[in-house]
Image 1 (tube, helix red, strand yellow):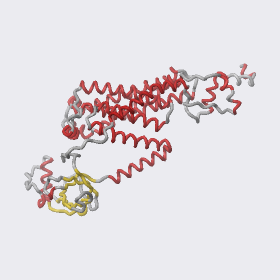
Image 2 (cartoon, rainbow, N blue to C red):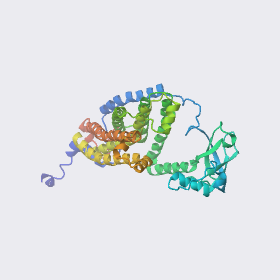
Image 3 (cartoon, rainbow, N blue to C red):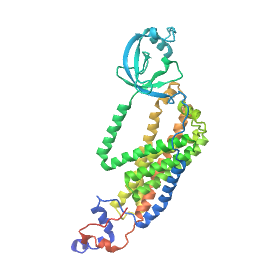
Image 4 (cartoon, rainbow, N blue to C red):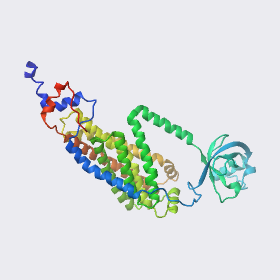
Amino acid sequence: MTSTQQPPHPPPHPPQNQGHSGHGHSHSHGPAAPVSKHLRKVIAAVLIPFSVAVVVGLVVLWPGGAPPHARTGVGFDRQTQQATVTRVDKVDCKSVNASGDTPTGDTSTAEGRSATQQAKGMCEKATVRVDGGKDTGRTFTEIVQPDSPRQFHDGQKVIVAYAPDAPKELQYSVTDVNRRFPMALLAGIFALAVVVVGRLRGLMALVALAVSFMVLTFFILPAILQGSNPLVVAVVGASAIMLIALYTCHGLTARTSVAVLGTLVSLLLIGLLGSLFIGWAALTGNTDDNTGLIHGLYPSIDMSGLLLAGVIIGSLGVLDDVTVTQTSAVWELHQADPTMGRRGLYRAGIRIGRDHIASVVNTLVLAYAGAALPLLLLFSIAQSSVGAVANSELVAEEIVRTLVGSIGLVASVPVTTALAALVVSADRPGSPAPAAAGPARGGRGRRRKR
């Protein structure tokens, strides 16, 4: 009631006690809540040795290129060239059926239906021209059965495999369609959308993405092929990607550093849980033709370690999203109400984090389920029980990968929120004089480094 009777007197007092609150509201367009110089030194004391260790790990483990090997001609390990389909003719399947087998007439099986179609239907005879390598301009024919999922047309760009030890007429064969142009166009549309919407921040995100691919291509993969421990390589490589990506996209600030610390703690938890349960469940990491080929070419590679490395690297991208979001949420909460203590900040931040956990975990599980959909269909066709499906190593790998990554994501929310609340609430003004002097400068608050 006294405040309504004497309106001129109250204003000088609140700036002394709540001066930073006035700054937080009147300068909401500026940088996030500042962090004291002492706390910046504490954060630097943790992150600088970690960054130095990552650089040392990169130097010590740097492979200098993938080791050479003699091509096996199996799967992806084949010599390939670009080629073009120059002509497609319809021919009677009987005239080009190399097996010469006559169908039994039984169409109750897929093999019987295919044999009938090959004997009675019309096949395609594609003429293909090699567009690269020492045999540029050479042509060969490819027979396409009527039930083949891939049909050719004139002018189509394809990829052909070269088998030098085969008879001359069988040295080349079509292995796939050349999809480089549509893939490059889609990548260009993606980059344009990111830059148009994200502007400078989007451009920096693309730079960070390019650096991440470089670390993966020039360090992680060759180092594993050279026989280095896949877990150590994954930890060093993932740490390098994390530091480069976060600081490139979000700036060299205390807020980013807190997100880095939260991501690091969560990655350590994922590594420990992954190592424990991969060993406990006796997962070998050698479950399909591709991993079998890798093991055959490079027997020294620890395939279970490779599986763990994949878990760590696969979890990193989603972890970055969670930790940055939680840190930003706590910073904005503090800026909106600087009087809120660390407990209040943590409680408010964790409420935001619960929604984030629900959406991210669901996304992660559905992403793995979508990737393994053909495999799940096979188990459904076989009418296998849920227990039998989950017990198979191929599915168990994905279950362990999903659950370990999800546990790390869930843990990253309270860890990062607690770190952010601790750091941002520990900021203290030095003296009341600068706060009191603020209105004399026309309301322009003194900005400190974050």
